[in-house]
Image (cartoon, rainbow, N blue to C red; front, side, top):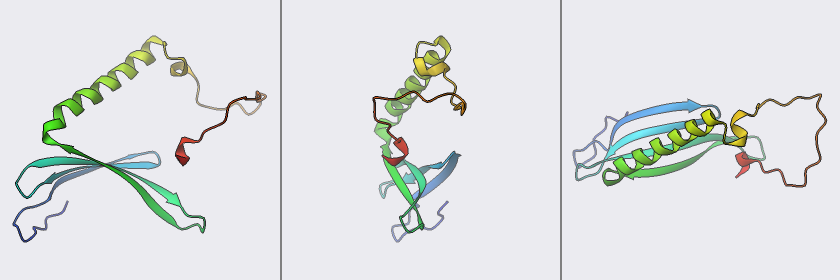
Length: 120
C-alpha cells in the first residue's frame, strides 16, 4: 500500500489486494481521485519472455468507477452463477471433460486450427 501523500494532501492508493492464480496475478486496488471519490483498478499481470529469454510482465488494467460498482458486481455474480449451473447440469459439453491428456490414446486428425489463448 502506498502511504505517500502527494502535494494535494490525498492518498491516491487506499488499499491493495493481490491474488495469484496459476501463471497470472490479479491486483485489486482501491484508489482515490483528487476530489475524494473512490474507484477500483483490476490489473491482470502475467510473466512473459522475450526472444532473448529476458522476462517482462504483460499487464491489462480496467478502471471501475463508483457509479458502475453495483452493475459490475451484479454482472460478475450472474456469469459465475451461470457457470455453476452449467457445470452442475452437464448442459455444457466441456463441463464434464477431463483436462488431462492420455498419452497412450491415438490423436485424431483435426480439421480445425489449434489456437493457444496464451498467445493472444
